[in-house]
Figure: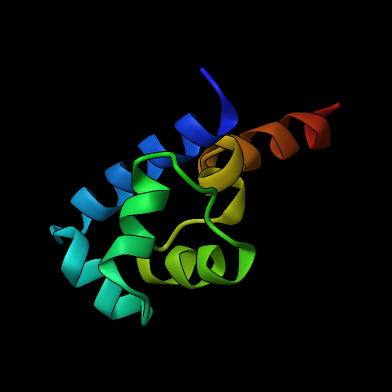
Amino acid sequence: MSMITMVAHRLTQLREGLGLNQTEIAAKLGISKTRWNNWEAGVRLIEPREAIELAVLCGTTLDYIYRGVAPTDRRRKYRHHEDD
């Protein structure tokens, strides 16, 4: 699966987790529904500026949006190194 497809899937999950439709999330981010749809459909990759706004709105990180690394995954990794 390509990176853009994986990001698109995570965007869908984040939107649905907020209980919003595409029109509603686009309005919250100050973008058009078409722009959001292009990201969620994997036509275009979300730009960092909008990804930051989305991360704040959803309480997640850019690592999760772009790489699929959940905040708890990252903390666990660092804790492991601290224990060494």
